[in-house]
Image (cartoon, rainbow, N blue to C red; front, side, top):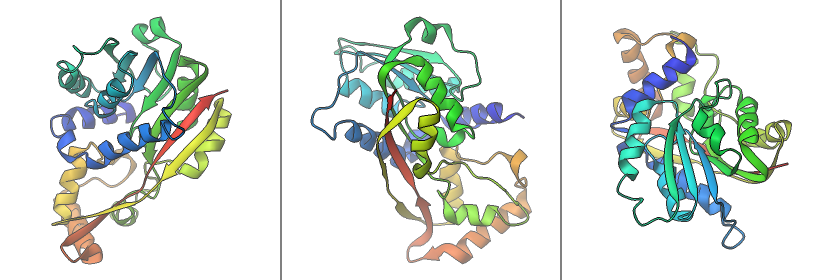
Amino acid sequence: MGAVSFHVLRFNRASPRYESEAGIQFRMAGRLLDLLDTEGEGPEFSSLLEFGCGTGILTRKLRKRFPKAFILATDAAPAMLAEAAASLAEKTADKTGSLEFAPQNAEGFAEISRKISARAPFDAAASNALVQWFPDLENHLRLAWRLTRPKGAYLLSGFEHSNFPELNSLLSEPPFSYRSFPGHDSGNISALGAKAGWKLEAVETWEEKETLPSARDILRRLQSLGSTRDPAKGGRLNRRSLQHLISEYERRFSGPGGVRLTWRPWVARLTRN
């Protein structure tokens, strides 16, 4: 199964449970809009394009922050798009702006949907906890550049390569032997953005550690968030290798109250040159 197909499949499966486990994604969306308003009230946008809207976590915040704007929310996973539309169906009546949804692969290699083309260019683009899944971030940034107007903005958040250091340390070893992991380091955003025609205005990084009862609970959470790894890039999980992963995780990373999971997110604001 190809990379894009696997990406869509895992998020389609995760859509019913996603928001129940998405505490970090909610906080990232909040800090993303805080980054926009660091210098007072911040800019006003009349049109916004959201990539990878998922279940609508950022979409709802954008609707609240820009009630008069037209927002086009997109996602490659049909089930996620349906969840977002359902979650926002009753929250648009008091807004003077409008909200629409469209399927779109935001990686940068796919054809642009007619609905996006008809509305482009947008005042701003936005995405939350998305770009870590794109190996070629520069290509995605070029897509965002194409679809925004001169001096437009892009608000985006993602995770460092060193996100989930506990899990990645185990998956890098046999029997899994993964050689690459999702993520883009915040220190590279400026250079990658410049290549795609963007200027970095602000970036923030932080770390969150949480403790769950067991390694099995951690794996269930990541599955509910669509964060499972593509088996084509490493060893497949069978019963024996799964038990090895669980036992080693608990042996190495247990502490008071359970086992540790470390998140390393970032948020950034770009301006189109």
